[in-house]
Length: 326
Ligand SMILES: *[C@@H]1O[C@H](CO)[C@@H](O)[C@H](O)[C@H]1NC(C)=O
Ligand SMILES: *[C@@H]1O[C@H](CO)[C@@H](O)[C@H](O)[C@H]1NC(C)=O
Ligand SMILES: *[C@@H]1O[C@H](CO)[C@@H](O)[C@H](O)[C@H]1NC(C)=O
Image (cartoon, rainbow, N blue to C red):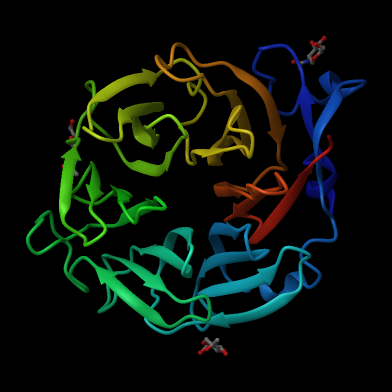
């Protein structure tokens, strides 16, 4: 497919942002990733809109959340690309997905922006799809903390300790970042609707780095904001790199040297230098991957063992795997 060829390269380039569709830049540039055209083995399992992807690098599994009528909502593949199984039960409209591994086992968390009786929730499933936990008030959008309510929760990150970060949400009444304890009580909450410091317009994706910083793709404000994971205190903002399109995803590469940011409307993955511990400074896009028109990359995840990057593409209705070349 033509899109596949166009999507092949990540360039090791200058710190300049590469212009979309100008492929003359690419000649002679060193590649950082290459598309694995053999993943998955059987793409016909993508029968809906593929919104999200999460990698279980410990067990070599890849979970995909898709939407649509009469389609399985969660698909499970092996990292080699073999389809394993799927489930539908209690899932309406998956938005974000995350694999949580602990010493005692593994589970899958997903955010559900559906408006039916299972929607407005963040849910935990066993690897085979058994519902283990529901956060939020199913079927009721809201802003309450007791009982917990969400409105279109966008993404979730769970630490090894069981502490949970949720960005809420994807265009509903809330524009906030919450941290919950391992028994699902509020530890802190930050953010309101707006474009000021610490405010959000569609907080769309969340991740935590190794230095105690929480990264949020503040999509509507075209910036990434960073918070202290213990206190929720605002630490900084990257405003200068997303004028063409807001950031949809925040995920670190396996070595924590880069952030991978999907930009849906310009069909691009921007790869930004991740600052070391301390101040986040200014942003710099050091590589990019230009995908084909209408691919619409929405959320990504990284295999923290192999370094492979998986991209959930709503437009192309597929998940693609990029493998690092060195
Ligand atoms: C594409 O990039 C080349 C090399 O930098 C440049 O000479 C050319 O003007 C660019 N074309 C467009 C349409 O931006
Ligand atoms: C999910 O639902 C669709 C449509 O009802 C069905 O074709 C599919 O087999 C179901 N998948 C699972 C895993 O239940
Ligand atoms: C957020 O504020 C803007 C005005 O700044 C308003 O247009 C929008 O409806 C508000 N969104 C929510 C969810 O309250």
